[in-house]
Image (cartoon, rainbow, N blue to C red; front, side):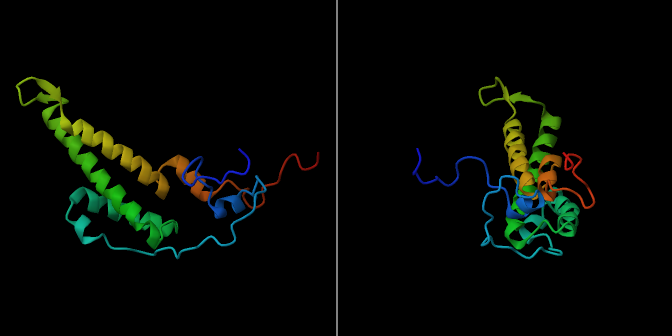
Length: 161
């Protein structure tokens, strides 16, 4: 299939240029010199539409300082944080609903059915996983944000061979 143009959105997600440089560009592929850079945010207040939700606002307040302090969050990433906090709130509320009423509830016809909160919890958890990874909120994606390059002063033990 040589000669076919690459289809955007297929295959592995491209590694950010900063990560390639930190790792020493192991693939030796051309570096995108035109990649845009955005200014990291220093602090952002919780949006009004989210501030009225106790769980979302609390999580926002906990995360914004960490993300801004690590200079991970830019204006172009705010929607990811908003979506993460909203999904977290839905997940918490669904978990409380299941704890209160159980996993099985009475359906419209009187028979037992799965509590609809189970579906809400599962979908919200999937969303949290996706948005959290984009923000580096889990150990695996956090290590990718930091980069895989050598630390200063770290020598290659095989360099003499």
